[in-house]
Length: 66
View (cartoon, rainbow, N blue to C red):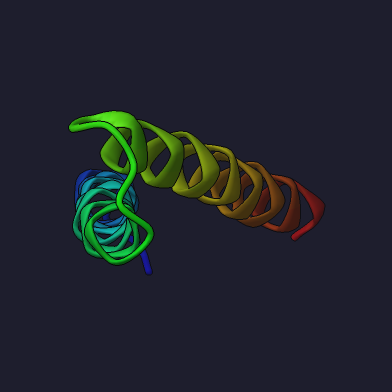
């Protein structure tokens, strides 16, 4: 991709969507496991935040190698 604005805005959109999926999934699991309100969302967001950061760092390192 030649346009860096599109490339990095696409990465940012993926990152936001990954965190939102973590929020939803954490809330769903928190309700199923009867955790206190907010704990499931927090755990889900933190897990997917780390996962998203790992993916973005890996993609950036791959771009540097080209």
